[in-house]
Length: 261
Image 1: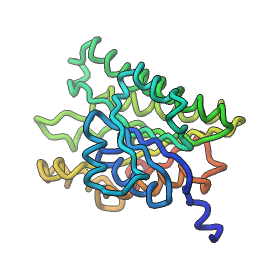
Image 2 (image 1 turned 120 degrees about the horizontal axis):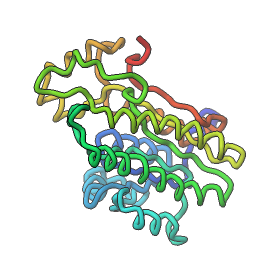
Image 3 (image 1 turned 90 degrees about the horizontal axis):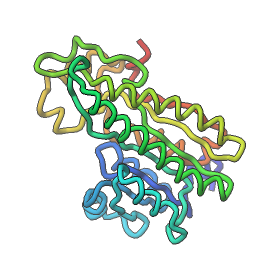
């Protein structure tokens, strides 16, 4: 095997992909699997199983139902010695949350979103990394967003739409700091932590429901188009593989240039 190929070879390695049955997660699962990994696709009840049936990738794709917000169930599953530890754990999860305007967002809604989006993620990342630290290495890949870096442009959100909610942007910005912090703290023990920062990747139903909004999104992208589903998978595979063995505490932005303006 050439050096170039071996850098991305995941044969014999186990990948945990949280949110792997989602729109962006599916091609990440396929890409990791294509490199030889055993991929545990983790999603809300029923979703991973349905995707595994559809994808038909064989025994190296293992579906598992687990809700990241059920912190006790997450702890039990991750700490179970019978469950092979992950060489890489990828977290594509984002909680559903309030879309109320800033001035109408209640204290309870804001607190609940932070708990689901940050506290539950923090606990899950810690559990996954604990096993990596015990055995001397691993890769954690978190997911932020362009709206963790820049503000939504309210001019592209025509009524009755609301601009992307503030709580979402705060959640995604916090993930970038979590990435930097953990990358530094765990670096000496060979556990790498990095983030992927997607730009505009509306799923097909969103594209079909509001083509005018998609056109406005496209107008803000230097490359002149929205992201395609598979275009996130390359960054995830790179960060999970030995190709990125000297990369930690960093974020890879995949946004067609959105945040470069």
